[in-house]
Length: 124
Image (tube, rainbow, N blue to C red; front, side, top):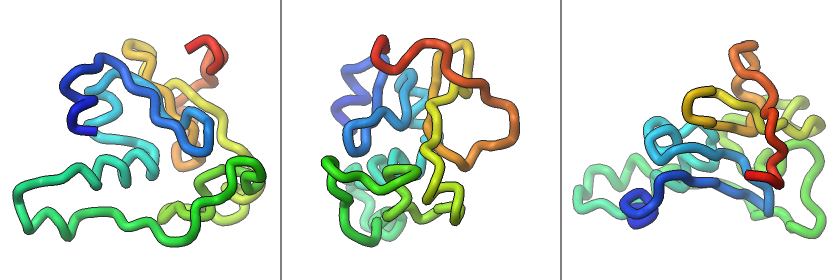
């Protein structure tokens, strides 16, 4: 992920074959919104041994991509799972920043400040 930050302008983070976060490098890296993106970024190696304790260690097994769980595909490992909504409803990719097209598929932001993504994911 550290190399990607140095050479890319935009980044799409996928989990089980679906885009869960998309945007400019600055939108995705600081701060990452999706819990899976946060766990990926916490795995970037560092020379500071004190930062090793800040890594997010996901629990549970990775679900099958052929037979993903209902609802959010990350819900079986998500440290911020919101009970039934994550287990039953698949989150839509929504735009969180119109100027940079930062998009996230997560139930954590249900404040009404995001709007559905107007461009289908297949066209990104």
